[in-house]
Length: 510
Image (tube, rainbow, N blue to C red; front, side, top):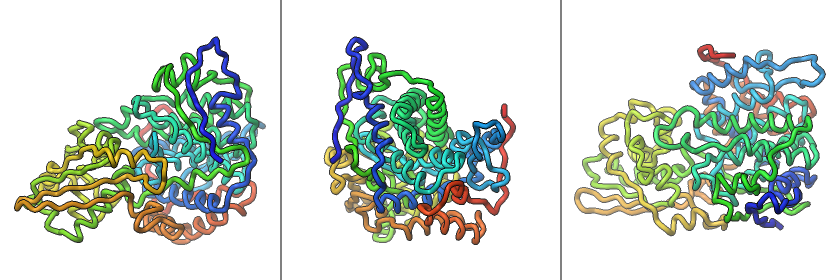
C-alpha cells in the first residue's frame, strides 16, 4: 500500500535524522529488491520504443546535431581500469558511437525531447518520465548490464519521478520540472547498478542540487534549450552517481534543510508536502499511470487536437475564418496559463514564432488542427503553415479561460476522473453557437483509442520510415521486445543506425 510522507523544512538545530529525509526514503525505494510486474515490463518496452521513435525523427534537427556533435567529442577511454564500454548514440553507427555515458545521455536525451512527442505524467507538477530512459540506458550500455537490470532501473526512475510529481509542485514557484529528473534518474541508475541506500541517497541529493533552474526556458520566446534541459538533468544524474560511488557527499537535508529546496525555492519554511511512495515490498507500478502522445505537441494539446479533428470532420465550415466570430476554450488553470491566452505571451499568436513556442500555444494548435483535420510533427509547425493568411485570421479569434471544474479534474488523484481537456464554445457569424468537450486524448488509457504495443510499433515505423533501413527497423523491434532476455553486454542492440547521413554542428570548444 502506498504511504504518504510529509515533507517540510527543519531548522539545523532539529537535526533531522537521515532515515527521515525524503532523499533517503527515495533511495530506499530504489534499493527495494521487489520484482517487476509483467505489465510494467511490457510498458518499459513500449516506452523504449516510443523514445526511439521520436529520437529518430529528430536526428538532423539543429539541437540534436549540436548535442550529438558535442557527445562525439567525448569518446569513451579504454584501458584505464575504471571505464566501461561506452554508450551509443541514436542514429550513429556502432563503430563511431561509443562515447562516455553522460554524453550519450546528453545527446540521446535531447533527441528524445526535441519534438515534445514522448510520454507524459501530469499531477501537482508536470513531467515527461521517459526522460529517465536515456541516462539509465547509457549507463547500462556502458557497464554491460543485462535487460532485466535495465528494466528494474527504468521502473525505479519512473516510480520516483511520478511520486515526486504527485506530491511537489515546481512550476508554481517558476522552477523547471527537470528538478524532479535529477533525483529520479539518479535513483534509477542506483537500482540498475545495485548500489546501496547510502550511495543512492547522496546521488539523489546531488542530482537535485544541480538541476534546480527557473522555468523561463518554457516562457515567452521558447528557445532550443527546452530540448536540452531534461538531457542536462540526466547528464547531471550520471555525474552525481559517479561522485557518490567515489564517496563524495551531497547537501543534507536537500529538501528539508533550513536553506534547502522547500524553504527557499518552493513554498517556504512553513510549508509541507505529501509525497506518496510505495511501501517496502510493494511493486513499482508508477509507469502504468503515465501516457504517451499520438501528436507532436505539448501534452495538454493532445485532447484539443483530437477534438479539433472531430469538429473538422463534423463541421468543415469552421475552417474558414469568415464564418467564425470567436472560439472560446474553457480548460484547466494550467492549460490556460501555461499554453493558453492566460500566459499573456504575445508570441503565442506570432506567425513567426519558433517551433518551440508554437508547440506551447493552444490557440495555434487548435486552429491548425481544426483547419487540417490532422496534425503532423513537421508540417504543422512549418513557417509557411503558421503564416497562412486564413490561419492567422482564425488563430486570433481563439482565446482560453480557466474553468474551475476542469482545474479540479486536472489535479484529481483519481485516475478515472483526471482530465486534460475541457470544453469549447464556437460562435459563428450567423449567431449559431457550437459546443463540444473532451476529457482525455484519444490515445490516453481512458481515451477513445488507447495506445498499446501495436500503436507504439506503428509510431516507430511511421517516424523511422525513410530514415532507417527496413531491416534495421525489424532488427530493433525484435531486440527491444526481447529485452528481458538480453544478456550482459547486449544492450547495444537497443541502438538504431540511421540510413541517412547525420549532419554535424559548427565547431565549438570540443
